[in-house]
Figure 1 (spheres, one colour):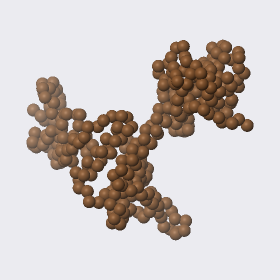
Figure 2 (figure 1 turned 180 degrees about the vertical axis):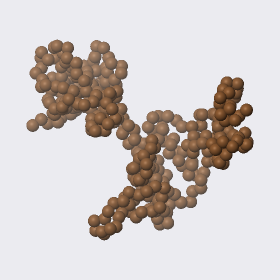
Figure 3 (figure 1 turned 135 degrees about the horizontal axis):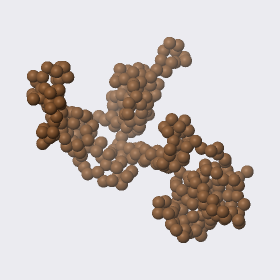
Figure 4 (figure 1 turned 180 degrees about the horizontal axis):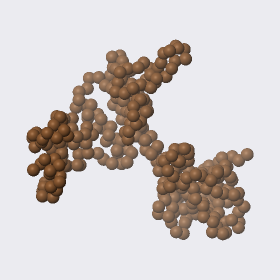
Length: 337
């Protein structure tokens, strides 16, 4: 039986490790056979390192892409570094290779750039999640969650897990129902949000609560809608609107600094909801877009076209200096002459 010994992670090896004896474990990401030399890109969750095998000096098992192998060897400095990899200045010259597990020929390329269609990626999700770009997203999310815990804990919030099986309550969407085995004909509902529970906590005097909450809503799918989702759920007592906004800004600043090392300047710009809707037509506007909506009601007040007459608001973009380029067809169609 092979003992899964590992002294270093694939992505951790650097110049200071030169001449060290190491043992690494990982999946074969790529291999190049140059006769007496075999180059293997070995991948684990920490990165990729190149393995050099001198096949005329070392007997090795059959190796294919996505085989799981264990490599013993010595770290050497590369003659020609690969600047695209953090480990690109070193390689491991193998002294022993153990085959841990074989793999069938994968149905997709296990790399950041893949030719696989979405349905193939979802069918073989366990392979898709081996891709470094996918794993990076999980690690980024984990860092964000850690930041949320650290920040809210430091501001005297208490994390409370609330029940998943609960009563149906009127909210913005339909509930998912779970039949009860014990109480025949009765159902639990999956929470659309922990609203009632966090209000109970406030009544109970906890004052500051938070939770990384899983929520469920039975509604049509869209780009920003799915059946279950996770939200940062916060409830407080005795804070006004400005204090809540300031608290949230601090959380955003910490997340950006800790996760991507970007300094967010506070306070953030704040605009009223009405202004956001009037200028941008959205409650989550991209304020970099400076072509604001303008009211066209006065211009079109006498227009009897059904497109406009029954609407309370008619708005459009005012583009200076292009009236002469408007075609006669457009003017006639909307009776703008």
